[in-house]
Image (cartoon, rainbow, N blue to C red):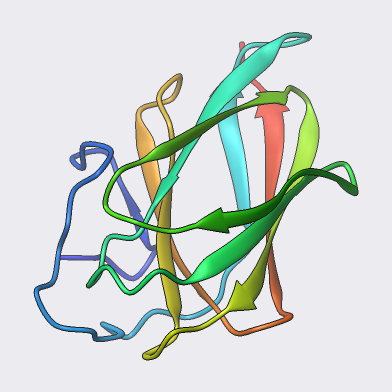
Length: 130
């Protein structure tokens, strides 16, 4: 279901891919996110695509926290982030099985699947498109 690039254009925000906690070969990755509008903001949607076990992450934009603790559930949480910028997602609390999550940017219609350990980070470099 999740390709080796860990990116999909077929997944709707809030989609749950597994009914038991598993890491389907995911590696922690940093992503370059293209095709976003210059000089404005983009919507970032984040949720737990795995079993809902209430892991927590912290979200930063250009090094500044925009949310200190986001509890990951199947219900997507939405945030507005500036473009261009670097969004960092840091693992805060793992309730078991690793912190697995999905991030979607509706502007480019792509979903990015990721995994993080506690105190580890993943970055999403937001780049304006044409």
